Structure formats: structure tokens, C-alpha cells
Image (cartoon, rainbow, N blue to C red):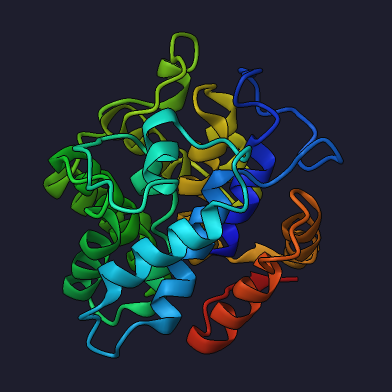
Length: 274
């Protein structure tokens, strides 16, 4: 979950100013969190406040996504999702946008099995992104993150993703020259997962995913979630997270850094390295 936030922060300045190289300033004062981090934390809050059997998780997720999200109208919501956030009764709208995948990483730290990961992923996804491709993108991200967290190898993760979700029959070098901005799951989640699979460290994974261009903050969030679970996050980047959560969009009504800290403590949802 922390890795997703860091990936979002790094990608925030490149979403509409794509770069095609791994050589770039990693985190600068121009960076910020976006809707990716805010919705990730809204789901984390729902996971902390739902019943133990998750019977009300969908209801809680709707509540916290709207209750928290309405405090950040300019954080980067897409058009239809903005309408959903600010509606009291708008139903799911058959979306297969990658917003479903960017926000789902918390479930990988709560679940105790692959089956539970899939169940929780669906419960927090289909409330808005109920198209099969939207559900699949979120599930693939959550499953990859869970597998990374529980000690699976990259090859094991690759095999599951290829068998159950997406072909990964490309390299980043092959797609980098022509890959363009894309907000749908099926054309961004596989690329973000491949960026992790080709990486050598947490930072290298983020650099990989930003270097192909595209929807950089969301690619960063997806790759960052998996990379944290596999490698751990360097302490120097962990320490920046509460600063960006507090200062990117100052808000007296919501303490995003507190949500993050409580989630990490409750579920031991962290993996850090020196």
C-alpha cells in the first residue's frame, strides 16, 4: 500500500508530461499525491471498519470513498468517477478504467489466501468498476501483490498472470517507443506488472513503469504496490509518504497520513529496507 502511494507520487509529474527514459529525478517538490493515493486510503479505511466477515465491505467502501473523496475534488478524478463520488446514489457504471487497479493494493495485505484476495478485490471494485475488465484489472493487481508479499518468485507471479489474466508477451524496450497514454485496465495493468517483473529493486520498478510513458501516476501506483510487497520500500522513501499525504492537498477534515499509519499498524502492512 505504501509502495502504491510512492509510485503515485513519483508518477504525478509525468502523467501529462511523459518521458521515455529511466533517468529522471525520482521525487521532487513538484510531486504530489493524486486520486490514486486518496482512493487507496479510502479502501484501507473501509477494510479497517468493516465487519470481520466482510459482509459490509462494499457498503463501507462506497461510504469512505465518497466521504473522503469529496474533500479532494481537484485531485485528478476521471469524469464519470467524479460524478460517482459526488452522487449519493449513482450505481456502478460498467467501467473498465484502470482506477480499479490503482486503488486495490490494501486488500493484498489483509487477505490470508488467494481466494480471499479475489473476494475482497471484487467487493471493493464492483461498486463502481463492474465491467469484467475492470474487475479483472483490480484482481490481477491484488493477486500479484499478495503473491509478492507471501514469498512467491517473479516466475510464479508471471505464470499466474499469464494463465489467469493477461499475456505478457512483450518487453518494456519493445513497447516504450510507441506506448501511449491509456486509462483502461487491459492496456495498462499488464504493462505495470511487466515493469515489476523486469525490475531489480523497488526504485528500479518505479523507474521502469514511468519510463514507458502513459498514465504515469496510475502505472506507478500499480507497479509500486507489487514492488513494495516483493522488495520492500527504502526507508528514505517511506519517510516522505506522510509529508506528501499531509501537504499535497491540505485538508482539515481528513488525515490521510493517519489512515495510512493505522492501516500499517493494524495489518502489519509494510515491508521496508534500509
